[in-house]
Amino acid sequence: MTLKQTLISILPPYKGEKMLIKRNQGTDDIIDEILITHEEFETEYDSICGYFDRGNVVETCRGIYNFLRDNLHYNAETGKNQSVKSPQAILQDKGFTDCKHYALFAGGVIDAIVNKRGGFDWCYRFASDKSRTEATHVFVVVFVNGK
Image (cartoon, one colour):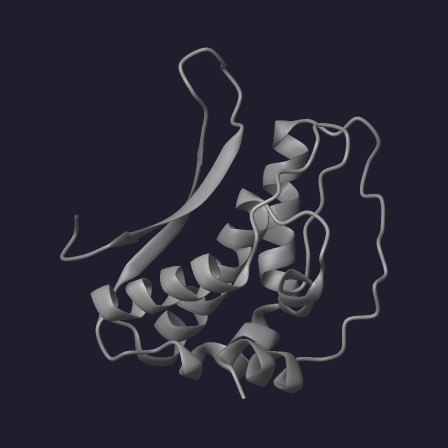
């Protein structure tokens, strides 16, 4: 059984349900929803984080990155259709999987590991390119020895 199949078997079933959070959402709405969704699925990430903990921060992050790269297909959502998902939905949904979903999965796993054993700090980082003033991208930053 692959790691992805193992995680799918552990997590609560994905029912394919979708909910519109807000029509015409803005960047602040999306940031809020990422933070709310992170908290909502903490216990699910707690149940799978052990599969990613390599004992040190660099190898743990490398394992999470490799898993996401190898198992999720990046497909950016349109500006009108922005979603956040449970870990099970991120693993199983064949539709859109973009930076929000990658960041939610990585952040959820990393936060669960940090809460169990400590040892490093992390955060979500919201960014934009030079041509925009509002955030258009989200990713996870992990601090190693304060850097």
